[in-house]
Image 1: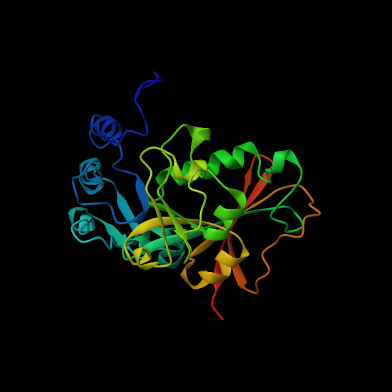
Image 2 (image 1 turned 90 degrees about the vertical axis):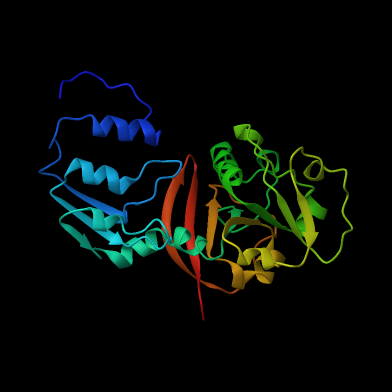
Length: 272
């Protein structure tokens, strides 16, 4: 290939497949590829990855996990020189949200706290998290199926819970509460194209979806047995506020990330 830049949208699957298919024949014939999930054998909104790898005629394909989705599997059967099961345990941990989502809701509880574990502050206009962390949260809200929030949080904080920092549509809301005594004039209830439900029936968590939970200590205690992962945004601040999550739970750390000045801590509850 020449050193000339290729202009195409690398996030557009159609463009990426077209670019790779137009490379010289056997360009990748001495290459090996390692993939977490079995290449899809299904043609949907994006082309079949199994079909693409078959065309590229790779030397070896290493697959960690077979695709659990009916109709998408059997991509490996189209390929030559395939090894399945390499690093399977690590791969399952990596894509755990995806695997859970095939059968029921993947539930993520989001927390923002100071470095001394407080969940409220008088600094920065009351915001614990940095602007970059707030943007990160809004990106997740945009793609979640539903945002689950505690009734007491709505009554005390009068939150908006939108995606204004990325100018995207606000998520649908489920307020977990036995009582309907809310001020319906707050912004949360008055955003266009948003559905707000109130109740204490969590059966919707039995359906495949991505649900983010935002709430206080009471909410965490009430649904701790429903939570898959916890995401903590820890800020480089100290707060003299007494509010915190007073709950006894063992956690397993999954990943630490730096988000501007904040630290993102991904973890999961370890069952007793």
